[in-house]
Length: 227
Image (cartoon, rainbow, N blue to C red; front, side, top):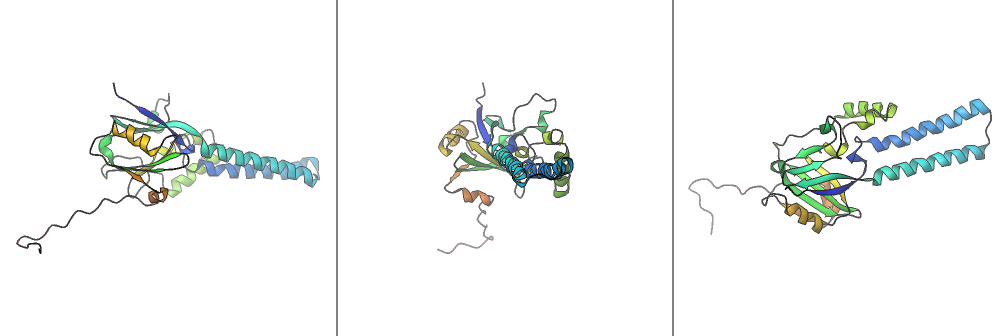
């Protein structure tokens, strides 16, 4: 039986589209505008202290919702001998819209760094790997506009976790409640032996993608290396 290890992933990308969290301030700004102008139109002049109290309550609710979405944890990272699964399990007819499977043959290398919540893991892909590209700026803007108008409809689209970054293609995963040593041990039991897993001392090393070391240049025929 295949051993599968399941880990918690931090943030809204496991269930929500990319950029979803930044729409929360827009929704609350619209609510504040309706509160101020609608209240004055219906009730006439509203005392300043009452408006300030209501706006402060909306601001507190906005900050609370952003903090909850930014730190929410879900089981959205699983590894086994057949590869890696990203995304939450679902009973939908089209689960490929909610999760993605990465075969070990499509993984070029893996890097990780310790963080306050656990481990930041980078999965680098080979150039020939089949990936679902992230939407371009125009399509992303249209998607966010649809989410802004219909958050329960468009907001259930493809999660940001299942679309890799480009140049080169790679996934960045915030794995919670685990140390680099524990994650390395779990990966070592299921990954191919030839697949490299590096542990970085600083998280800042994840900002630049890993570049394979260049191969030594071959010397022309008939030329000997100096002693």
